[in-house]
Image (tube, rainbow, N blue to C red; front, top):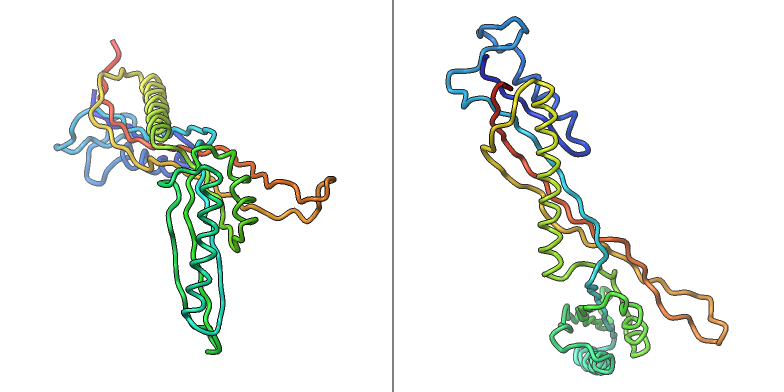
Length: 254
């Protein structure tokens, strides 16, 4: 049997691209001999019988971490005036974070700037904080407390995974990608009447976590008790993805 190489793709959106690769490998090369099926003879440096497959794995998991960006703004006639106002507002925010019993290491000072306005008649400034929550369900509570303490800006809320969860789900996505590659290679081998004999190489790509971003919106309608309803943010699942390329060796089926 002539040495052969098969390429395939496993996963959404790659089959069309790979089809061209299969034709290029199995088609008759210029100046090469053809067998009865019209397949070109392999080059002399061909490494042997191989099936190359790309597999994808996706895992969706509920977030167990939330990251908020909360800030205060100020304006005044002088830079010192703006700086002093920002310092006072920032201290009030920190006190609100302390009352929420947020760990000190979970609250970091972020962007701070004071600049002259475009028309040159005064100054304006901004001071933001990065707040990390181990319990994503507290995002609305923290936003409400910060707003009550004088926060002027609340950025999009990032729902993500803690390090231990991230590592666990990343490995799970890789396992699924490899399982999909194995299944695809087995199908190709069966279709071609050959048997998989081993794995030659494995490479990974696009292995990562895609956080979910949500925006906290103000509800203009007041609750029946007369106050504004608590802020609630419902986040979708975090997607963990992995792609692998596996090259298998094969031999004639016995």
